[in-house]
Amino acid sequence: MKRFYKDAAFSAEGSGWRVTLDGRGVKSPGGRPQVVPSPALAEALAAEWAAQGEEIDPAAFVLRDLADYAIDVVATGRDSLIATLLGYAETDTLCYRADPEEPLHARQLAVWEPLLLAAESRWDVRFQRVCGIVHRPQPGETLGRLKAALTAYDDFSLAALNTLTSLAASLVIGLAALEPDADIAALWQAAELEENWQAEQWGLDAEAEARQARRFAGFAAAARFAELVRG
Image (cartoon, rainbow, N blue to C red; front, side, top):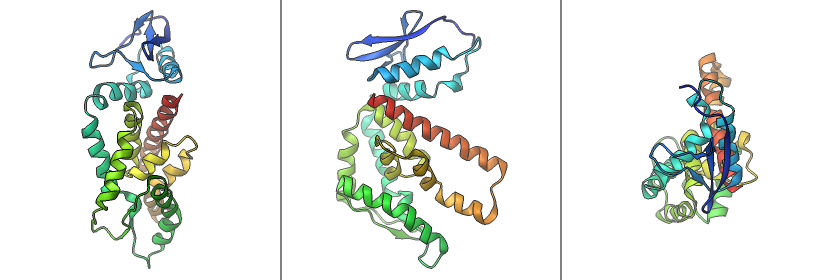
């Protein structure tokens, strides 16, 4: 698609902020006004539009896509998304470790246990740790408190959390990445611990490296989106 506008800007609208293209407000794919909660996010969205050349590259609108997801999907289906996120808590990667006699177990314990302990302290919950791959349900009280925590997030933060959690296969990591002081690179390394371990043993081919880089880019973009939402 060819560029159809000259200027990309943003302005206040109601209780939020909205990108304008040649003075016209941007809408979501669902036809809703793309009003976002912070000027910082609106400015970043306008920058995506302004950075386009003569041909528009849809893949360059990472932040816009997350905003549209918040407006068109999260806002109209919060309960469904929260249920999906709680499903990740049920099978959180950080809770499933190798057998204690395996070398991998020691690294999982060193990297994952501090994250789980921090989550348990923050949310006043208890996670069931498992050695092996046989599923064990998490305590109902844990899931109930996590549900209450998720319900307190706004639609835009939940949109970011959905991407963070799905890429990490861990709600614990996803929630940690939403924190203002989060070390995003370290959290990603925790999420990729087992893959990195395998790469150390057998090597990592170029295709796997490229896939890992794309996934990290998506993870970092979602974390940035959450930061911009906070303003």
